[in-house]
Image 1 (cartoon, helix red, strand yellow):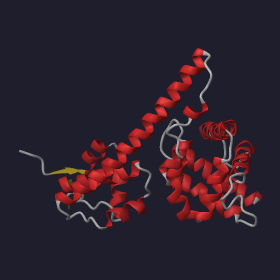
Image 2 (image 1 turned 180 degrees about the vertical axis):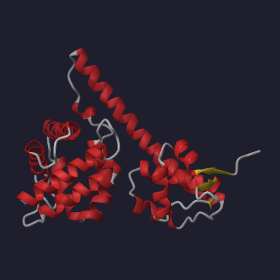
Image 3 (image 1 turned 180 degrees about the horizontal axis):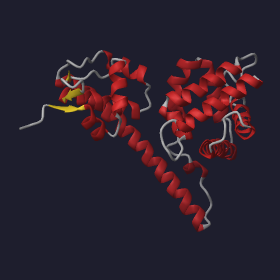
Image 4 (image 1 turned 120 degrees about the horizontal axis):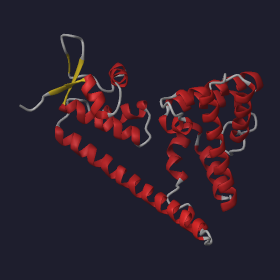
Length: 265
């Protein structure tokens, strides 16, 4: 007999998520269970599974939960299979575009490795294929305005290849040092953590178009807000993920930045 619904524990295991996450999705109205069993456990039917798949796909594409709720707003759990299939076709197109972009990035990095190991000259025009900062255009404009994106875009395009490489290395070094600090168990308020926070703020204030770089901008609020975003948005939190997983690394960065902002900005 074909199974009609699955318990919350089964769905968490199959989807690679947690029961806590599924309960949170229910609490915010994103994924209500199909029924509540006599023991109080949530159960989900096939239609709910399709909705969960869409939620997870949209998360992978970088959308936050409020944005996902908007996308799914016109598609209630009670919609027909045809409508759900059409929506999934749209998601599939986006995933294939992302797959193409990632394939280009992989080929770019492989080409660089081959050149380095073979002592060949690096081809700058090939090294950044697939690395497209413009995919964040809409989000930046919504958060900070069109001028913020235009200023940042102009700054990025005006860099030489060497300057871009140096900037990316700086970002990488910051991420590495944040992770090391978080895994070491030191206090976010410790001198070592605060030194990384100082470098982080210095880096932020060097990016045109952001409130941190604008004359008279509220740098303190911006820094504290970014710290919260690192925890709330998996795209950013992934940059500070420790070996234990979860949001521990991002939480450490948030707490250290808040201490630094309160004491220095």
